[in-house]
Structure formats: structure tokens, C-alpha cells
Length: 189
Image (spheres, rainbow, N blue to C red):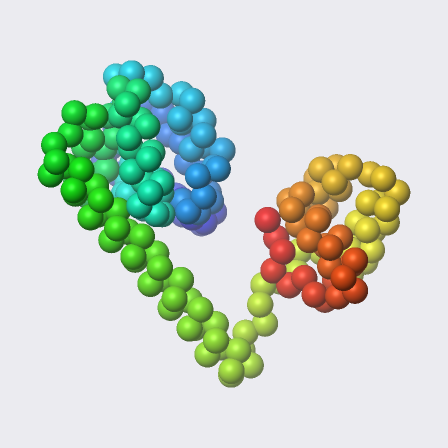
């Protein structure tokens, strides 16, 4: 699932499964905790049931690689929305369908991003777009930088402030470049 507001009830309505792996991050990233747990968990003879192809991967290469990797281990992959099942003994037609349907999912994702960029550009022209809310207040940024300067671990600072380690590094880089906390509008990991 791409957001915290989404839930699996719609995606798995009427589908019987033994265990659910549900990440609340974008499918564009293969490094998702639940996805990785699922890859470690499944065994020969299991079936991975996925609501739709775009829930497993957002680009064609990752989709094909994931399906091939799973089926090579004897794991079947079933896509509910597309009504497709891959077993590793797939026909040329099944491979074609995976490629075509995956390409459509990737194309759809690209269109969404393009429309989003266009909408943001129009909102900026109207003065209605302010960007993402900053993760930390200026006072918190000062405390974060002081902690880092005192030698505290970045992971510890990230936990303390409820941000990712990458966001800690972004705040620190912004301070080094002289842009201050104002130069970091969208840095929540």
C-alpha cells in the first residue's frame, strides 16, 4: 500500500490467505520491510497472492525479476485484479501478458507523476502550493545539529526526533551549505 490510509480489506476482499504482508510504502521501492519478510518467508509450493501488479512493483524490470525469482524457487505468483497466475512453467503467452500488463502499470505510474507535477506547477503559479510541511521546527533543527556536533549517533538522533537517518543527514547538509532549516522543505524519509 502506498499510504497509511489505505488498507488491505479492499485489496484482499474474498481472498483466503494464511499470512498477510502489507507495507505502507510505495511499491516503487523494492526495499520494503514486509516485502523483504515475504521473500524470506515463502517456500516451494507456496502461492503469493497480490491484489495487482502495481502493488508488487512499479516498473517492468522489477516486476519481471520478482516474479521470475519467486517462480524459480517453486513459488506461484497470483495477481487477483489481472486474474493471472505464474508458476514458473509459464507459456510464451503468460510471459507476454506479464510484460504487457507490467508495462501498462509502469506507464500509468508515469502518467500519475506527470499529472502531479503539472498540478504542482499550476498551484505554484496561483500561490497555493507551499510544499511539504517541515519535519522539524527551527529549534529542533538547532538541537539536532548540536547533538551531531557533540558526536551523538545519527541513528539515535533520528529516533529522538522521529525522522529517518537520511533526513538527519539532509538537515546537517543544509546547515553546512548555509541554507539553514528553511532550505529543507521536503525532507521527511
